[in-house]
Length: 629
Ligand SMILES: NC(=O)c1ccc[n+]([C@@H]2O[C@H](COP(=O)([O-])OP(=O)(O)OC[C@H]3O[C@@H](n4cnc5c(N)ncnc54)[C@H](OP(=O)(O)O)[C@@H]3O)[C@@H](O)[C@H]2O)c1
Image 1 (tube, rainbow, N blue to C red):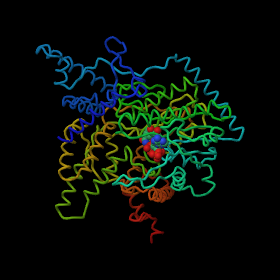
Image 2: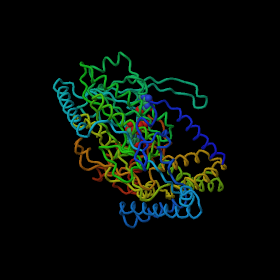
Image 3: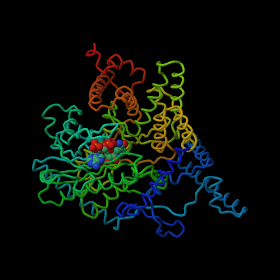
Image 4: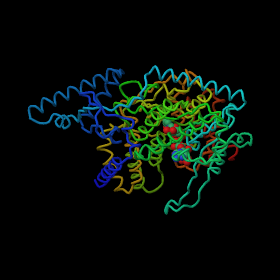
């Protein structure tokens, strides 16, 4: 109870902060509220929290039942369009019934409707403000930008410059894969990575122990990418900077060199935290993007610069919960069912800023929008990433280990077993489709865009066309991790099960497990609720020239589970150097295995994979058996 109160308090404190946001950070810069009755734009203030799913969710049990019913209907009919129609009819009937009852009782229909069915009547909707130009003018303008980019690209090629790019976010999950692929491709002559210094602080006291310089971070990065030969390292340089600073915080001296050499800028840095407050996400994602755009614009407007184009890395979840229509590559529409978190919302705002900047300033820009990025498709390597889908897989894996714990007395073991069983519940709908895309496909798309000037002016989804359902994912987790996870109704889980569970866990001194479960349920659960967006794909192949067959998501997810189990030990191995050592051994093992079996590792059944792995590797020390013995 005390916990619920402090959460509510935190929420209202946050709302108070959001009310005082400066004009430049206000959602009304991008979004307008429109009356459903008159079609007029309303003058009401728009607070960030108004744009999130959680502000509009109905917590009523009748609504829960309706969701369940729709899910069952989906299972039997497999016709999503029909199910959505039916959902609409049911809601309309509910509203009409509530109105009749309200009339009989002489009460407010809105209140009766909410009390009986959990239905809220909205008399407004949100939409994004449009850039003031006709579609024809925009199309003609973009054609000109593509032509310009082609001419400049060819000139850089003719002058022997090739492709030289500045990358922000190079120390991150996606950035590292970009660096790895660029290292192995001669088309990319020079790569400059913008890195901020890293402060190492004492965990307990918070005291600053030392600062790792951008140069040191860069060298360590190349070591971890197994780039050992001087000729492999020669194309990389590191500059100090911070995307939240004007001109990316780059010194005058570094800027002088960059403006004469860089043909492209890839802006990949962001804060990918689903639970950050609005202002923090805004600074990293929108202000960061504006700084990167202004930096590139400075290069483009400089006569001495060979600059060709700017690449902005967004996310296909800028479409939020767009459940009624396909989430199109060409257009961002404010989602009818809002955004899951401020990360998605601020990335959508960043995408709008990018498009407007291109139209207003004439900057040549390509936007690339990955779906939920998972480890590399063949081996599952992720360079220590523990975000998004990794989080639940790691929690289930650790719960499984606790279930099988052989240590301690009977009472300890029983307690561990009860806790683990409690942890193995995930809020979600069995039919919810999640868009997972391996990181190698994403980096391949980003680098392909550097070689395609025709990609300028386009927003391109780097997403899958073979989506997994929650139930498929849990079945794979059972086969690969050995743990049976039950799907719970999300609303019920959030409002009833989770608070009880966290209270019980706190009483048992298991706050950490309680917090992990709460985080899983409230932060990641939104991605497996019913009615996920369907992201259009096609430009990856048409515009970027990528292969027609996108990675097999089931195989890639299987490799994610195996990688997280054996290489990362479900998030317990955290040291970056150790992860890098293990991943290299793992990568070589997978290549050998695929050669021996003439199939992809992800297609091999769990038991067979484990037998072959144990023959090859000593899992205790994580070394190949020939070396270990
Ligand atoms: N991961 C996904 O599932 C996913 C899905 C769709 C789109 N994306 C997009 O892909 C991009 C990369 O994501 P990721 O998963 O690689 O993220 P990540 O692993 O969290 O890495 C974030 C990167 O941004 C850098 N960064 C953050 N704030 C910075 C600042 N103020 N100045 C300089 N650098 C800063 C970080 O540097 P430090 O090392 O110094 O912290 C790090 O290199 C993001 O734009 C993200 O929105 C990711």
